[in-house]
Length: 450
Image (cartoon, rainbow, N blue to C red; front, side, top):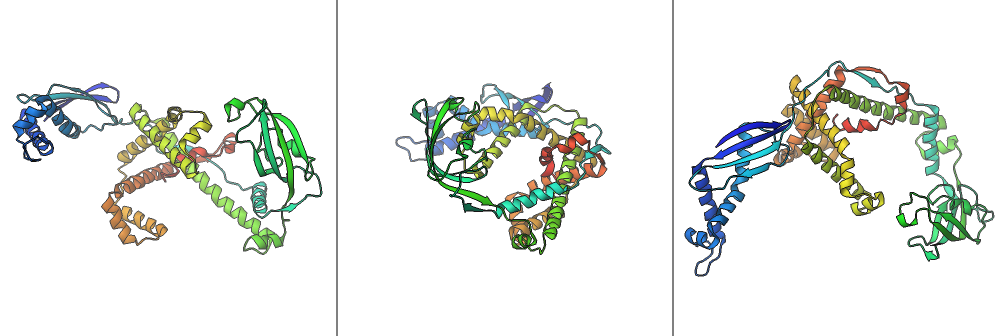
């Protein structure tokens, strides 16, 4: 088979392929034999139909089209292999008519994986967050522990106050018609929590046990149900229970009840230590991410649209899985977001492009620096996973290699080693004060790479 490659645009080539006449004839006869095994004709047992009868019955054009369907993918793959083209898109094919007395020619236009032009990636100056756990952060965490151990006490002998939990029956109408889904029985509302539309919870303050009240509030302009936005609604509530939240006092006895520590100060010291470890780990993940982003910014490359589209599609399916883990369907999610799947996928494209850029640049750095992963390192990683999974290490190694998943593990280790290389070479500088307020969300983009 003869293949020529012709660049037609940046990251796009045209393959001009010629399949020898002998190969075409051989594959045509192979397809004819397959059809003879499958076709049923009166007077012949299945699989015993003469090939001449198959051509007569099905037609020469049909057999040729089946030959292309059977073997064009194989010829295309062979052309990619012969030219070492790393295609990242489906081919745009232009086919010559297939005949049996001459070579068969076709062209395939494909987008190809780009090779970045690396800029500076050694000795990068990268800002790093200074970790300092404040007393306020410790108190916030202790307060969350208090909340977990809070209890509700009946307060039916007084009117509803802010922060109370009130059990009510609710009905609602708008423009004289009942609002679907707004009626509830024995519904608990925390006054001041903001779980209801603005104004609803305020109207509960001052009510007593057994009180009935009707009041009007308006749905906000961004309410999830479009037809109710900015519409006035009349609510009727009946108060059935009033409860106040009792938060335990911060004492040594509290610390002893909720932890293994004897004193409150010991509990606070433990919380501070845990926060220090968490924030240090987060700062390190962020530093790694920023080091990669700096190397990417210094590189020059244009990402083929097909790679961005494929990555965005993958991110959409990741989102779909996350939504499913929360007990929702994508139909429900899309309706709540008031967007289509196509709109969500389009919004994911900037993130998708950055993900692709990171991988391409890291691959180029890995190749430039000769970074490798040994078989022993792959096996050690699998054995470490075995400990977490409660599996026999040697058996898991056998299973992973048998399934072919060891290649994926090798790629992960290569990526992590390359990020380690960048980080080891980078020079950490103090992060500017304005950036200290960020939550380091971008750090997660490379956290899985190291």
